[in-house]
Structure formats: C-alpha cells, structure tokens
Amino acid sequence: MAEAAHERKLPVDDKVHTWPHLVRMEFLVALFVMVVLTLWSITIDAPLEEPANPTRTPNPSKAPWYFLGLQEMLVYFDPWHAGVVLPTFIIIGLMVIPYIDINPKGNGYYCFKERKWEILTFFFGFHVLWIVMIIIGTFFRGPGWNLFWPWQKWDPHKVVALTNVDLPYLLGFRDYWLSAAFSLAAIGAYFVVGMALFYMFVVKVKGKEFIERWGMVRFNIAGILLVLMMSLPVKMFLRLAFNVKYILVTPWINV
Image 1 (cartoon, one colour):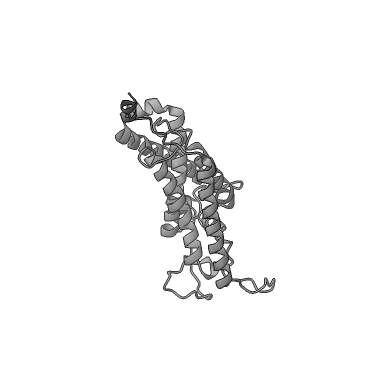
Image 2 (cartoon, rainbow, N blue to C red):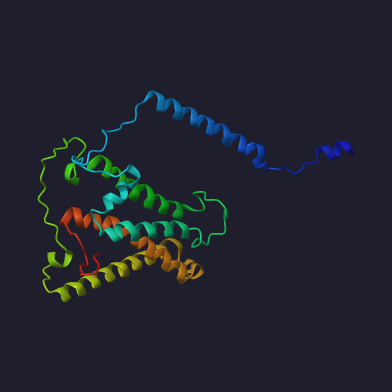
C-alpha cells in the first residue's frame, strides 16, 4: 500500500512566495544596477554645458529630453492642445485600456497572445508616436528649431522660408464665418470617417457579435481615443507637406 501511494502522482504546487524568492532577486538586480550606474558616472563625464548666461541664449533652446516630445508637438498644435489636451488624453487612454478590455482570458496579466491589440495600441501610441517626437526633437531639430538631416551641419544662419497658412485659407476661404463652418465640418468629418473606419476594422477582425458583447460605450470610448491619437501623425503630415498651421481659427481657440 505504501509503495502504491508513492507511485501515485501528488499535486505539484507551481506557486512560490514573494518573500524571499522575488524580493531577493529584485534586491540583487537593484544592487547590480546601482553598481553599473556608479561606475558609469565615475568613468564618463556628464555632457554639461557652460553656466547659464542670460545675455547669450543657446540656439536651439531645448527642454530636457523627457519634455522634448511636448516641445516638438508645439510645432504642430496650439499650446493648449499640445500641452494640456493631448497629454491628458494620453494618461486617460492608458488608464482606460484595462476597463474597455472584455477578454476574460489571462485576467490580471498582459501577455501578447491574449492582449495583442491592447499591447500594439500602447506600443504605437508610446514607442512610435511619443518616442519618435523625442528623437526628432533631439537629433533633427537644430538652430531656429529647423529640421536638419543627421548628415547636415547645424547652420545657425539657415533661414527657412515657411508660409504657414490655415487650412481654410489654403483652400480659398476668406470669409471668417465660412472658414469657421468649413473647419468645424472638416473636424466633424475627420471623427466620422475615423469612427467608421474603426467600426469596419473591428467588424472585419472580430465580427459584429464582438461589438455587441463589447457594448457601444466601450466601443465609442476606444474609437474616440484612437481617432485622437491618430490626429498627431495626420497633423504632422499636413504641416510638413502643406505648411498647414491650424484647422480651426477663432479669436478664442485654435485647433
């Protein structure tokens, strides 16, 4: 009987305690990173510039690298939009992702197989859009905040003749009210077309029954956030290709 009990498969416990297994590994990794950063800081000098001089402003004047994305977005959007609206929606969008996800599998963790669309959305919004803004501001913006290719010399005397025009003016509208009506219609059409494309994409990939299970509230929140995210590359294209400054211009607000 004892031998038979030994031969029986006993349940295997595949869980380990956080203490000491995880905490011990995190402590060792923290020590390793601290040693590496200490040696790095001792052997390599920080690229500091001369003390600040109020009579000599550097050209270009760049923010720290973690703010260069915002500084680059100021080229394409009004300050209230680039500095307040977009960052707010970025934070809200990242917080909302787990709540608009109805996939019951893998609840509590985010593996790529079960969360591919959420992970790809985050990857595109953060790594492609935000990191690209930082890279452009760091390596491609020179004196006068002009664009330079990496192999071009940063010439402080370079003058770029840009005729920045608003979209209604570019298309021939000169009356204020007609321009405002066209701008509002263009913004509304952008959201309508964007939501329609998002709906067709979801139906093609997931099917109509998925939207019914998802619910219109979750669908609309996800669609609006995605359309807002795509407004950044769309506006960059309009600015770089056609020198379009604003879509809607009013005495109170510019979009």
